Image (tube, rainbow, N blue to C red):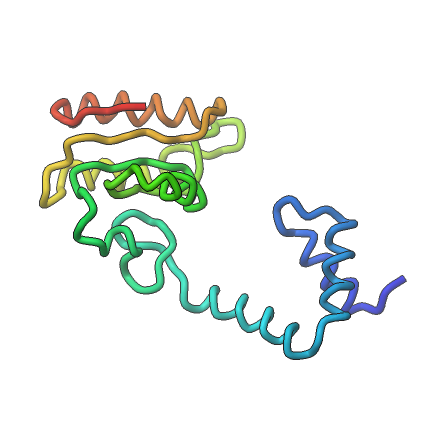
Length: 172
């Protein structure tokens, strides 16, 4: 029905989370109606993000450079770590302006059914961070999602931290 480049665009847009076939088609048609400058700006911004954004060397949040803005902020409490599943989970916590610690992004949640085990996440890095940190970690807040996988992940981390670092307070 569509020329191959349009069909390819619809297919690629349909791979985005939450974008079904009809939404992908609407987005593709919107891009076709957009000015060449607007379409080029969209393409350039996607390319720029892929080239310039990586993971923070400390917390694994998104970062432009070796460290994210939170880990670079000396005013943040380095002794308080909030563990989240995905980088997007940091945003709602930051919007509250209440949490003044730092984060640790796991990159997902444990799910044996889907083949996701501790080695697939940044759990070992969290344990190293708690054990080897220059400033002692006082508390780890487990802010994983309240799904079955999120709860299982929090339980696994809490049990291991209580065993490996009994002086660190673990809260949910």
